[in-house]
Amino acid sequence: MSENSINSTVCAIATPAAVGGISVVRISGERAFDVAEKVFKPVSGRAVCEMKGYTAAYGKIYDGAERLDDGVLLVFRAPHSYTGEDVCEISCHGGIYVTRRVMTACLKAGAEAAAAGEFTKRALLNGKMSLTQAEAVADLISAQGEQMLSCSNSQREGAMYRCAERISEKIMDVSAQISAWIDYPEDDTPVVTEEWLKERLGGIKSELDELLSGYDRGRMIRDGISCAIVGKPNVGKSTIMNALSGVQRSIVSDIAGTTRDIVEETVNLGGAVLLLSDCAGIRETDDEVERIGVEIMLQKLENADIVLAVFDGSRELSEEDRRLFTRLKGKNVIPIVNKSDLNITLDISEVERKLGEPLVVSAKDEDFAERLGREITTRLDLDKLDASAGFIANERQRSCVIKAADAVEKALSATAAGVTPDVIGVQLEYALSAIYELSGKSVSDEVISEVFKRFCVGK
Image (cartoon, rainbow, N blue to C red):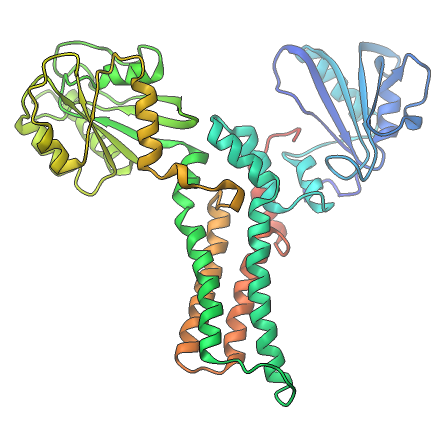
């Protein structure tokens, strides 16, 4: 937890620190109604402490005897609130100064300042949500695209938690069978055979491996798809960049070497977030600045999730194009033959042999971005991610699944080596512990604190 005790009453500004229509100051804890009553006076004359949960009141907001603003008070009574505690939310006019004054008034009235993510942390500790659901709240807030929004909502509704529960139940079933067979060998307990263990443990390992295999898809949806646009100079990379971003971020010119540095832009394409990098054209050059740009481009190329390799369809393949084929070996590439509005003289079949079937387009076409979005989604298997089944959303979750998979793998190896079932049971305990850490059923305070570092104050 934070320095504040779980039994303390905390408050924070729950809306952005900017001018807007309204701002909200949230109060949570056992003394939430006492604090709100000192700050907010309903025009009805009714006492705040007498208000029922899920009701609102219009009134005046005070700091001591000084009237600050008019506003609305919403009340939520424990345990039927976001945090599971008594909660009051004061909505005032959305000026920065008046909002801070309302916050200060709540502090003077006896509340303590909430730490980052404290309201969600209290929801976790009060059993209102699991750790994976809490992590999904942060992902929901930071979502920049439709895919991330959908995935975050699935996780927030418990998709990953249910997945972890299903796997933990299977591990416990095997452990229970082993224990029963060891402790009561003379009863009618089914014999734990090597074949039975391999079948059950193999199924558990397959589920864990499937989770791990979807990690990169989840990471790209969550953090964005790193996408490098490469090709020799003057093939239309900057035109493609501008078409995708909707603004002229890259200078378009017939002069080779115009783009000397990496031009970057974040765009929403087909519901996914693309982290675009328009890279300097690949060519031999004596220009020191351009050469540095090419070197930076090669670094981007190495780390990209997907590469858009652009070729000028109106010109024959050059040695620079063919050198690009070599550089792209082993990369996830979408070849683009640009300038289809001109006479195509490029050997498309050679591009296809080296890099796969290309998109033959004109970056000036109205449907270009839509076509490319569909191709990226298909190429990266993003359409195969079933968010409702649960997926690994971050490195903490991935680490837990890896530990569980390693323990089950050791149990399988021990089974094949003829090791006694009690030793196998120890490995299953390790696996179960890792799954409990994943869901938050058994997790240290340090892990919880690390998770909530991502949160903003007020949530």
